[in-house]
Amino acid sequence: MKFDKALVEGTLIKRYKRFLADVTLDDGSVITAHTPNTGSMKGCAEPGSKVWLRDTNDASRKYRFSWEVVQPHAGPAVGINTLLSNRLVEEAIRNHTITELQGYPEIRREVKYGTRNSRIDLLLLGHAHQPECYVEVKNVTLVEQNIAYFPDAVSLRGRKHLEELADMVALGARGVLVYCVQREDATEVRPADGIDPDYGRELRKAIHAGVTVLAYQASVTAAEITLRHALPVRCP
Image 1 (cartoon, rainbow, N blue to C red):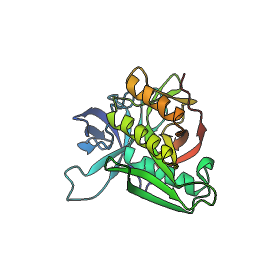
Image 2 (image 1 turned 30 degrees about the vertical axis):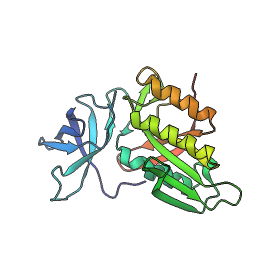
Image 3 (image 1 turned 90 degrees about the horizontal axis):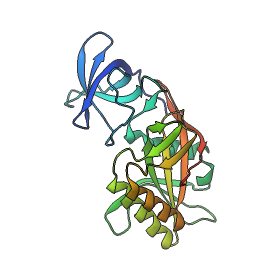
Image 4 (image 1 turned 90 degrees about the vertical axis):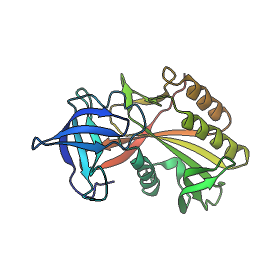
């Protein structure tokens, strides 16, 4: 996925109130940008980090700039916009990067499903030999010692999504969780048991119930973010 125009460079002053970040632009001006990430952004919100912002040029928005990429002091560029992960996974299905999800001619987005008034990120339909496939996507930005962890904060919503995928498998469908790792320094993905042990337990239950768990890693630059290859998911 290429950004439609060049991102604006700056230096992070601080992230606060979850969705806001103060940034010094390269011309010396200071702006407040929207932060499209609901997690803690552990390791990705260090003051002084280089950041890249999308300029929406939308006068109706309270915050004209949106934070897209960060380069922490010790690490590669990281895509922090969780809203992009669904698009990245859909693109990787369509271009045959995600080999496990091929053979479905139809992909629908944000479809209502289940009994809890939820929406699935991607619904794959029309496979000649497989049932419909419910795909939940999670954005991963936390890496420690080359291990990617999810979640980076307690995630009740993440646990709920695992339960719902297991429910669909019980009804005869495919349930797939895809971790979209928007950085290049991870060699595997694990549940962050030290942050949210309940999520880790729910993930293991979902796997036992037949939910497929995949992880794909992106290359990240200020011009383009693209999923490139699979990573192993380990639940020790």
